[in-house]
Every structure is written in C-alpha cells, then in structure tokens.
Length: 264
Image (cartoon, rainbow, N blue to C red; front, side, top):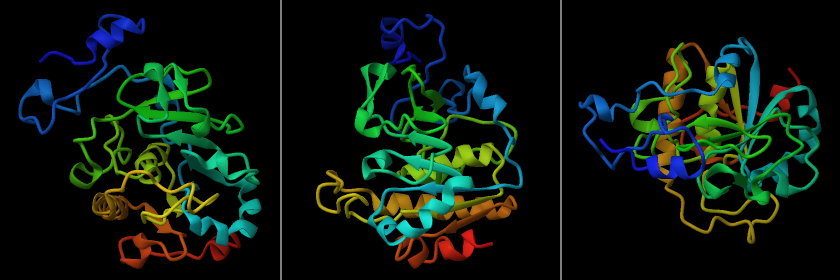
C-alpha cells in the first residue's frame, strides 16, 4: 500500500525510509500492511519515560469554564504532576508550571510539524508534547505518534497499559487522548479537570473561547467510558474533578472533589 505521506516526508527533509504511517478510511485490519499496530521508529524519549512515574498521581486539564470555580485551588498544583492541553496558556497567569503541555489535533501544527500556532504553545511548561500522525520537529517540542483518527479509543481501547506502545488512538478530547501517555509513564491515578464535555466555551472567555465546530460529544463519552473501564481492569484509577461535568454527571467516570483530593 502506498504511503500517502511519503511525498510530504521527502519534502520536509526526512529520510526516504522514515516510518510515517497513514491509512485510508475504514480499511480492512486483516491485512498486515493495514495493521495500525505495526512497529514504527519511536522517538527515544518515549522509551525513556516508560513507567518512570509508577504509583504516582497526575492531573490532566481541559479548558472548560468549570475551571473558573476552582481558581483558588490551582496554586496547590505547584507540587503535582500536571498536564495541560491546547490553549491553556491563553487563560493568563496559571499559578503552576505544567509538567507536560500537549496538543493532540492537527490544527495547531504548522508547516508540517516545523511550527506550532502561538495560541497553543506554552513555553513555560517543563515539557511540550505534540501527538500527531506526522513527525513534529518544532523547536522545544517532543513528538508522540498518533494513529489515524479512524482508529478511536472507544473501539480499540487505550494504549499505555502494558509494555508495548502503538500510535495513540483518538479519544476526541485532548485530555483523554493524552491520558494514554500518562498511563505509559506509569501514573496510578489520573484526575481530570476542566473536562466539561459540552459545546460551551473556554475558561478564559465562554463566548470568544467557544468551540467553532460542534464537538462529537457521543464519541468523547464512549471513549471516556472505555478508558475508565480498561484502567479499572488494569488496577489504575480515573477520576473526574470537573464540577458539573458530563463525564461524572452521566456516571461514566466517578466524581472526586478537587479540594478533598488536594488535602489528602
């Protein structure tokens, strides 16, 4: 099967045999050449972080407006492992330095991986990770391979729960997609914040920060349910600290009060 990104890979200076993967829509998974689990040339850093945070907890932030009700608790995140997503930096002076800032969609990535839209950047973060189909070589960013969006977490289950990692399937919400990296890193407990799972705006401005394109809420809910169930079977914990969030409101992920979590 011809690789549709082969020409693009050559144009941006990658080696001709570089393992950029892309697959046509709803192709037969029974053919070896269409197997999305095929081995690729993983960046070295991915192996280095495997299980380095076993038995620890982390907090993964969305940008939902519910965060405005938890502002007084955010300074306590200074000593926690925190993951932020997308335009979190646009919110202003966040009172902690994220352990990892991530993007998991193609929109913020510019020039075929050579640049990142400034609105989605977070230079102050300790680490920046771009989860994408093609290699991201923007200065200061780490590339994490992602499966084509036809490969979805709700159907295939999450990566990161064992000792073999494949390109990450999409969960249709960046906090849930990047949670698979947290699993690979060994985190025992994952807490979600600002994952409102609505069509509403962002924490910094409910109107101007509004999502321009309607989100596929059903896909997000199904992915969250699959992630929670698979984590529970593996002895891991997933909690939702989003006040009024749909994930906990619909009973897909148990709710945990952020204040109680941070106070021990």
